[in-house]
Length: 270
Image (cartoon, rainbow, N blue to C red; front, side, top):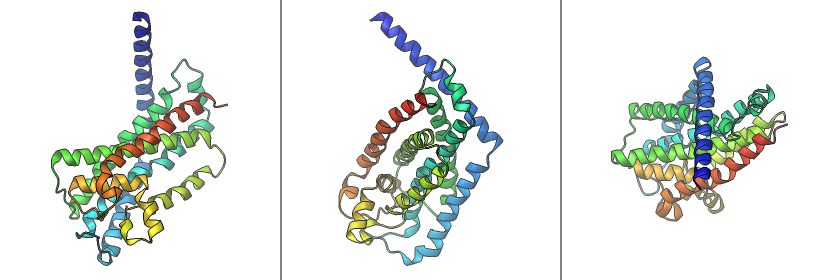
């Protein structure tokens, strides 16, 4: 048992060290080419301004409240969801250029490379989240909940982002055909809009509202609105009673599926 425990500790230590090396390598790419994250932030701000000021006056919230406090947590959740295509593009590019195969030729854990990518992207996502929240405060959004509740909301947003990153990593390793990124982007947009990010599911036709309510992104957005002390736009149903539980459960399910799949896809690259 002692020998087994020592071997396990050594394996974990090596994996953590290797993951950190890959994380630093990926972060240096952001330093040299910061335009991707910058344009991602600008796009999210544009969405916030368009929906908040152009359409916001025409939207009534079920249960009361104004639209901007409802909208901003939805935009934050949408930004976290957009980790799929960006991460997929980088992983696919590394695979095509042979970078991933060079890592595979080294005595490294098969988890270290995708995990390093996820950690680096999660750090970048935290910066994006901070900038967007600051921008929201500047245009009038306010956090009505306590500091701990606001921190919990940020944690849920990053939890969702982590799950989306692993989905993107798996797709980047598994789908290396031409046009794969465009296919994923076409799928991401309906997933984002068929949700509670911009309007309440209670204002939609029954079948569409049902799909939107069970969208994983809707759970995170609703839970964050509740924790921030903003209007949720939900007056009944699962999201009204168990949004936080669903916001924890959905990403956990995605991680349980796509972390093993990503590790397996990394080992089987040819």
